[in-house]
Length: 105
Image (cartoon, rainbow, N blue to C red; front, top):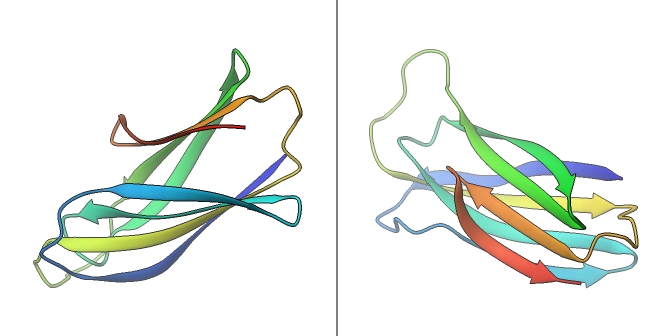
């Protein structure tokens, strides 16, 4: 299984909620979403694990080096999952240990 994470945009925003949606396309699972960060210079990384037929993807902020504008930021992201096992029945995406998506396959 291969999981790729891409930040598609990062900008100051008054929106402070985190959410995600999932679509299945061409044998790929694509998750589009957004999370809140302290500023638009932060990045994202993911840590994933499979337990009890569930794929859990935990999104975590990565701290930027240097100086950045100070504003609440919306980081839009795309996760692409290729080659997911038939044994996996649920995908859960967490951000800061809070669930932003749960999807049953």
